[in-house]
Amino acid sequence: MRVRRHVAIALVWFGSAPILAAPQFPAQTEIGAVADSRSLSKIVSEPGREVSAHSGEQGTSARSLNADISGSIRGTVLDERGDGIPGARIILRDVITLEQYNLTSGGNGEFTFAEIPSGTYSLTVDAEGFAPYTSSQFTLLAQQTYEVPNVQLSLAIQKAEVTVRPPEVMARMQIRAEEKQRLLGFLPEFHTSYVWDAAPLGTKQKFSLATREFFDPVSLIEVGTTAGVEQANNSFRGYGQGAAGYGKRFAAGLGDDLVSSYLSEAVFPSIFHQDSRYFYQGSGSAKSRLWHALSWAAIARSDSGHPMPNYSFLLGDLTAGAVSNLYYPRANRGAGLVLTNFAIGVAFQAGKDMLREFLFKRLTKNIPGDGKP
Picture 1: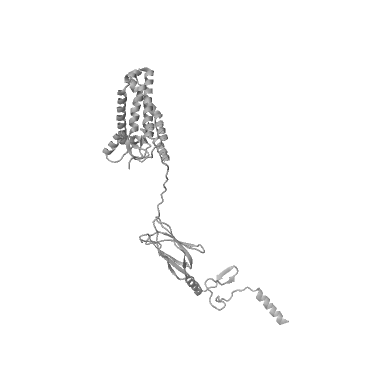
Picture 2: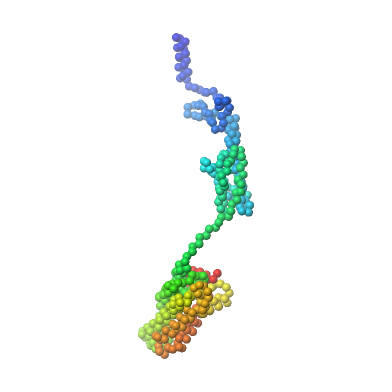
């Protein structure tokens, strides 16, 4: 009874006493071997604190084992000539876990991924000015140094977008630009093309451009100014003086512009498939530019882009002179008036084209081109 009571007291004492320490034993497998680096044995020294059970020798063994299951991957990034590409961005990606490693190639294009876990990987390389490169999948074994073959980048293809528009659309866009051309900022210069290879105008566009220039307020002011000068000089005396005389001179000038503009810039160009615009050359010798300007009154450009006699201007000017016999004073009518106006018209056109070639470009705003390349 006493023995059992002493045993009971001892058991109660041992059960309530704190455990000060536990004996440390090397972590072992069932066959007594040291556990590998992936199994971690722990003991409790104090409540809430965990301490690794590996000794210093076991830590060294773990690092050795980790190195045993990893490898390295290396290679060289080359261009098409076989020269190394420095600064290339290289991404190594595990195709199973999707984990990735990044680095930049060295001065000769070389790179090395060290201590990479064994597995299946793919490699992506990107360098400025070169097309991206992606390798096929490859397997890295433990303790293997894998050499990535043929990391060769080709030059990036420069992509250029070319928008092809129908000729009539191109012509419409060019007409809008030409309608902004103003000599000295206010005089209309719509029938000069500074785009050498401008799209040909359709019939509707030829009439539209002629109408736009004829009804431009500045054009009407020019007619009024000319009528005033004629009245001051008492030209075409049959019209008389005063408001009535000025009105007749203004109407005659307006009629000249109306007939000449529409016949030379719309009607005949549509019939003969010609372009009535002057095409600024702007390049070559001064002699070639002078010849180009002086000959334009006689040689025009067809809608197909070939030179041909300028039927539109010559017939338009001659017909306008003939029509003027209907409203000029009787004393000024006849073949002499027609031929005189025709000669004056040709000379005026040649002189104007010469100024277009050598002077007007400097004085004109909103010019969309530079002439012949």
